Every structure is written in C-alpha cells, then in structure tokens.
Length: 190
Image (cartoon, rainbow, N blue to C red):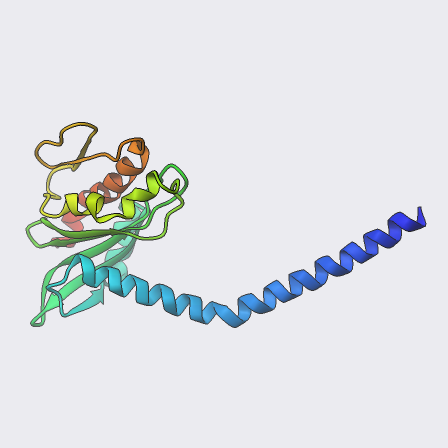
C-alpha cells in the first residue's frame, strides 16, 4: 500500500511540474501567437482582394447585426482604395468534416468573388485538406454572391464549383462559408 501511495505522490509531482511548465510556455508565447494570427489574417485579406490599399474593420454595430443573422461570420472588413469602399473581405467559420474551417472570401460591390482562401481547419490530410490548394479555391473567383454557390461532384454549371473527390463534406463546408455571406449582403448595402 505504501508503494502505491509513493508512486501516486511522484506522479502528482511530475504532473504538477509539467502543468506549470506548460502554463509558463503558454504565457511566454501567447503574444507571439496572436501576432502571427494577425499577420496571417492580413495576408489572407490582401490575397483575396489584391486591389485594396487598406482594410478597415466594419463598425461594431454592423458586425453585431451580421453575427445576429449568422454567428458563423467571424470578421468583416471593408476593402478600401483611394479612400472609397471597393468591396469586402469576410471570414466565416462553417463546420467541416473534422471541425470548423476558416474561410476568407473577398468580393466587390457587385457581389463578384475576387478571391478565397482557407485558413485554419482540421480536415483529413491528403483528402479534405485539399481545400487549401489553388486547384480548389480558385474555382470560386468570379462567382456571384447574389445567387447561392453550388457544389457539383461531376461537372459544375453556372455558379457552381466542383467538389474534391472523396471530400464532398469539406467542399460543401467551404461553399457554405461563402453562402453565409449571401445572407448578410443586405446589411452591407445599407
């Protein structure tokens, strides 16, 4: 019995030290992690709306109204050039096969998609993770947000993309993230 208690105390000490070291590492690195996320988000915005000179976060009341319509919309930015709004960049978080997916979509004032990038996700490597490849995400460029974007497994038609073979759920999730924007276009037009 004494041997079991002794092993339990040793395990408790090792676990406590490991937890303390993990907490300390988190505290030391959290600022750098947040800074890297900001840089990654800014880079994605520039990639999906390259004509913009700057990006301005939408006013808090607009973001709140949009989130009340669809809470899966994470960020809304105005794409600015020459002091005027030229379009928007919106980050959505639809649910995919392995969890939520960050989908960053840029579109002009006419509702035409200027670009799309997939950020953080937990999709299956080598299958659903192919949503991050240009062969997939460039299909969205030029599609119209004023109509729902569709997914086709074989031959995409008007305003449709072709699903990744074996990863239809992931393909549909990215498309859902794009279609979430259609639901809030009227708020942006105010």
